[in-house]
Image 1 (cartoon, rainbow, N blue to C red):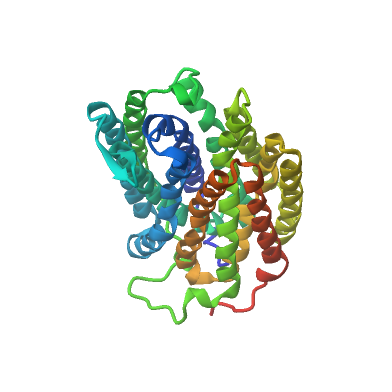
Image 2 (cartoon, rainbow, N blue to C red):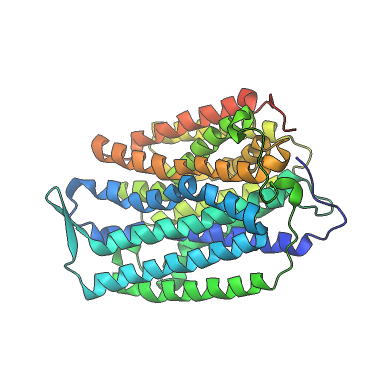
Length: 419
């Protein structure tokens, strides 16, 4: 991959992007935490499909990744990294406004619903799904900027995979504190099932205001572009980015990675509730906390190749998931976060290797794979509904780990080089 000019200072933009990675992680997990109260508030009339509809919250968020990844690449090539970030934050404010509207509609119009096969779905839930997609679109575009920028920008005594691990550590910090921040601070320790829909309005309004302040600060920030990672205005690239097999297979690998990551992070609470655990949020916190610890460790692994990191972590994750299924023990699932921690950075680094000016487009294409975070948790919810519980649904995680192992050993080899 072509590096940025070492004479240009990227330290301040690097810190800013690490912070934005924290915001993405926090909002991604906070969005999932609303499954409990929204399920209780909106899905009582959905019969045996409550789990399926609850996972639509996660589905709508991650659906934005394949839909909007190309938008991020287009914006980068037209107006640069900085203005793409500012635009993405404006989109995020609009999405948080939809969250606010969802709660408002539920309070003011409690009987407004849509009939679906004899079941009643509240319109406020549909608005929340639109908001989840919109905020997910913002997160998508931000990551289209953050991933290649962290990989390519020059910061003394760091390597690309380290910078991604540092950004990932910030992301994991956000995902780790979000469950307890939402339940413990925002809602004063109430069980998620006991939270009233009217209590959601103020947090959404405050979040929107905070994002507006961040956008204003970013406007004043000096953030040099990295021209070697994107096509020039009006420039037409000679070949399709899909012609690079290590990228194409990397998109599939990230599909399974994000899918299995979100399956555990989003659905382990529902699994624990099914087993009547007293504190389901603790399991999610341990899982995301393991992600944080693993990424902090990964930020120091400058001498361990991304391919080796991916092989080791997929093998250990598979063993833990199999043990969790056999023993019907969600605590073992929570420990998988330690091994999922550095997979994103390893897969992304391998996928964009030697792509040069195709990199920004590749980053947008790469986001298509994040759709796994929408599809696999939804599929798992369907399996749980039709199998009578969550236990055996976790076997699909092992299949995803197996493909990532294949990618590490074979699929990530660079066979086509960018000119």
